Image (cartoon, rainbow, N blue to C red; front, side, top):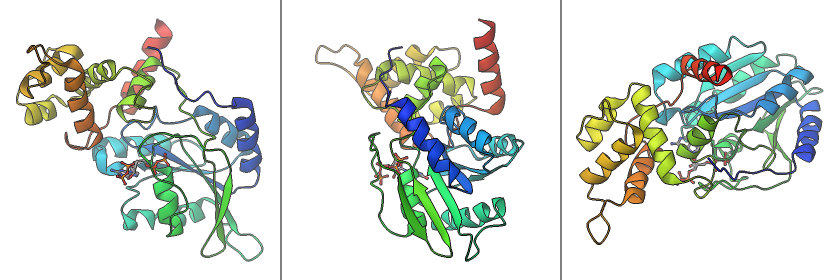
Length: 290
Ligand code: G4P
């Protein structure tokens, strides 16, 4: 699958992240709760460990994710040394209010007049980092947009109560370790619309939904039973049901793919999670065995 993502200036970005981490007490890593592993950037984890910084993993967009699976991911993350995890919806003020107390618990020696609590927020594009930052600051500091974009500068903002937060726009890129990650990131729109063929992404998404036990969601929305079908067949069946046809009457696969992707991205199939700790481990094991 040809993926054009953000190559960036990786060495410069790595140096900048290292420098920034040196002056923070807690790292807030924003993940997409629908793909908690695929939306990580492993470099951040490596740097955090080498600096021995505690980390709050925010499983954002929890409103779009399957709550039982979010709980599984939180338990899995919290088995890691120095890590706490919270499920949040950046648009829900009550969820946002839980973030700073959780950071304080990770660095109880800070938030004093001589030792302000220094936070850093990082995450790959489109996980909701700007929305969270704005919600934490109570004002519009970062631009929110659905199209992944890259900006460069690191910025520090003051928060109430002897705390500050550093934003790292443009320093994080999706790390596509496995082909499956590329598709998952594209399905959740963390890589741009034109980076991968939408038809391939939709077929992969359809197969993943089936493999993750969500056939009933497809049935409920599109009124057919996808059991036993492959991804392309599911997308075709969606196209049939939705009347996605070209002028001559031929099935418009691109349109059908867009129906599924848009419905998924907008949460119209209900709350869904595309990977579990167990499915992730199985995928990695299969990859290593190949
Ligand atoms: P980024 O900085 O990490 O790139 O992400 P950003 O905040 O720009 O958010 C990307 C999109 O995700 C935005 O959608 C934003 O509203 C949406 N989003 C962020 N957090 C959540 C969340 O917890 N739940 C849901 N459902 N969506 C979230 P958009 O379409 O560009 O904007 P909007 O029309 O939703 O405002």
